[in-house]
Image 1 (cartoon, one colour):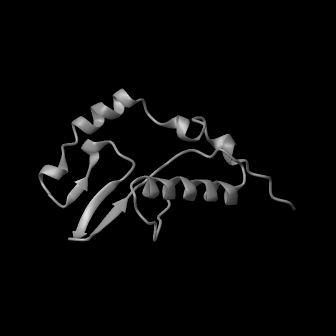
Image 2: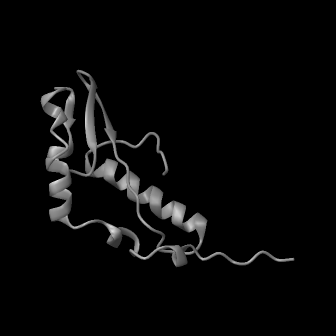
Length: 106
């Protein structure tokens, strides 16, 4: 018996990055979350910057760039979708001037 073909896109309504919330709503959420850079001077880029990623200083010449993304599938093939998701997350690190050395998926 053959398993039915699962189409990833049938589970998504927001069309990939199109599922993001409106900038005004994001501003409202972030404004109530506080600015942690005031609490920790090692947080070089936090939510108040509205940037591609957060940057946390580890030592005088080393910082960690962290980014988390979520978007709904835009293709049906799981392998291709994984490659697209990885490229999207890695591009955020490059946008911040960093060098990707590891990744997490959610």
